[in-house]
Length: 319
Image (cartoon, rainbow, N blue to C red; front, side, top):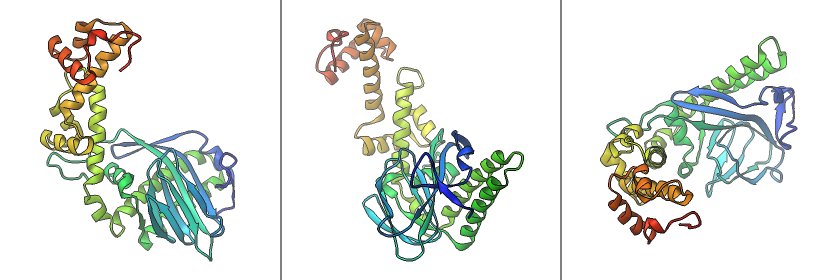
């Protein structure tokens, strides 16, 4: 490891000299069906057990890879023992803290990132798709926070990649920034591949909680986007979510307490209510704009949900 200096933007964290010039802007990668945005890469050297890293949370998900030392990580209400070669995927907003063990100070590499544009998590038969995106999203599910210990061969590959990108930064030859970015993409892929091979990952991946939560989240987003369009149907949503219509309804009922039809109805009513509040439409116009084919049904549904007729809703009214 080359000499590390304090990150001027994040005191307490370390970066190779000149590193801030490389990751000064957001870097985007494509991993499988996911668009991955890499925000920050840095190291934290936990000098003593007394110092460690106090309880904190991050806006973005984070990968923590321990290159040396030992300690304990508190996350998700549990305490996990970490050592050289441990890798931990921290969901956004997850409260966590680190305590060093006596002896060699722990050196932790942290990659802050976000994920967007992911594809289905299940195939049409409801089986998990073992893609890069699905593996990553399973590791970021808040209910399944846990570390994995990488096999020695995988540790060596990850460490070699880190060494290569740091050395590229030191040499600063023509095109060094592009080379560092390519090493970073390779590093992310190696971390996923190595975790996929780690002991215990198979049981973790087969667990349904992360897939069902992901499917419900995707279905809710689909409803919000397509509630007022012809594509706002259970069949279309199930196809996007990679599951059957019946299974999607069962998952939504378990995760949200509502069926797809109930979520769709609420989204359409909220859209109509916004039009009425703004004065852009009367009741009949708002009903049709929100996707209702029958204004009388719209009025009955509105009254049932909000407790009064839609005609009472004006610019100054609130729900």
